[in-house]
Image (cartoon, rainbow, N blue to C red; front, top):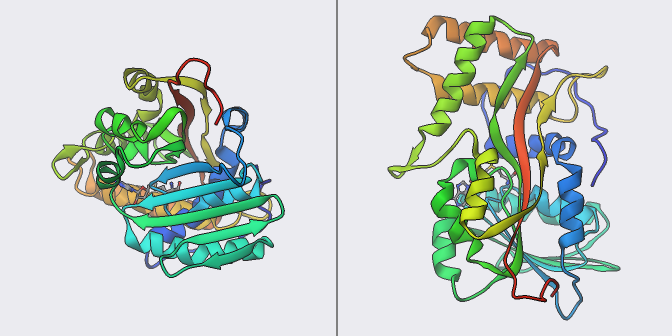
Length: 328
Ligand SMILES: C[S@@+](CC[C@H](N)C(=O)[O-])C[C@H]1O[C@@H](n2cnc3c(N)ncnc32)[C@H](O)[C@@H]1O
């Protein structure tokens, strides 16, 4: 695992516009600190051996900018691999295709990119081919079922955005027997801001925000659960997978002696903006008071006094393998 970020930024004024790509980039250092080491090491231990002739086949859904590709390549856990990274959002896939080769070159890897956007990264002991595609995971599953299988499926900060009872079995159908599912940074029902402004109003905002996740509909279908992390245990069991490892991966963001790390002040402004948008017009919240609360939270980021904690879980699961088969 990469160490903590070293670049420092002091507090920053409220952004005039918000970019989801910048938010995902800023999130990387927060995730690096949060990822559960026990689950990560369990993943490393469970990965099948890979060789140039038999590379490890990895699928990541909702891959965003490809920060998990960066993390896995940097850690040298991956030696020989094909990595299929898909995301619904074409602008994020375009950004990933731009960002990954630059990142890899800066790490000293040899990089080749073809016209289809496939990226090959090489250095002694590592040969990773990354293909990216902008596509809805449901369409992807429908296209690939019965065609290809993967040994490892990654879904980071994704499952709390979809309807897990239908999406999970569909995704698991793309795993080969004995294949692994790694789903880190899965939201699990805790949004904490310090210092308190008004404990009762703070709690009403937290509850209202979680309610917006529980009631989210996409194309008329339920798509979200503010307690996805804990609910993954029964969902995985119901989908025929066993849980190999689990642990918390809470985001904890605060300003140290030099302010917030890396671009984490932007990350905080983005989270507050997201809550503002999600709860605008919420019937249970006084509109004027809520606007003042949001303004105060942004001001706390500017002053470097805001502490933000989100409770999340990392899980590692495995679908059943024929008796005697555990490695490729
Ligand atoms: C919270 S972001 C996490 C991105 C990345 N995994 C990370 O941790 O940086 C969730 C991502 O899932 C993608 N996504 C949401 N629903 C999707 C779907 N149905 N199919 C594919 N991608 C989806 C979004 O576009 C977004 O990039």
